[in-house]
Each structure stands twice: as C-alpha cells, then as structure tokens.
Length: 75
Image (cartoon, rainbow, N blue to C red):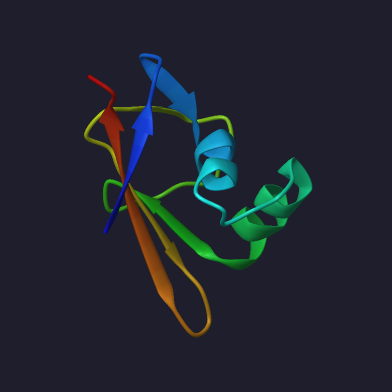
C-alpha cells in the first residue's frame, strides 16, 4: 500500500489517481471508473469527484494487477 500525502483536508478521487500516477487526465479517470473495479474503503465507487479524507483507502483492481493507496494528512 502506497501512502499519498495531502496538504488539504480533502482531495477528489480523480485528483488522487492523477497524483498517484494511475491516470494522467480526467478522461482516463472516467474510463477507469467504467472499466475497472475501483473501491474506496472496500466499497465500489463510481463518482470521480468523491471527496477523500485522511485514512481513506483506494483500491484499483485492473485485469492483471491491483494497486492500493491510503490518503494521509501531511503534518
């Protein structure tokens, strides 16, 4: 699991995926939501603007791999 530090109270799911390097554009995030299993805290998520807070865990399940990130607050 990779830790993603944020400087604000929340971050949008699409921004987190771009920050993590999983997507380069919002269009890629949209396609990811349509073709992949994207979980937030273990539940399927379809909203790319979902607000994430420190402690939230995002999992992207692709055809051949699984990537997981945890949001943490920068101190």
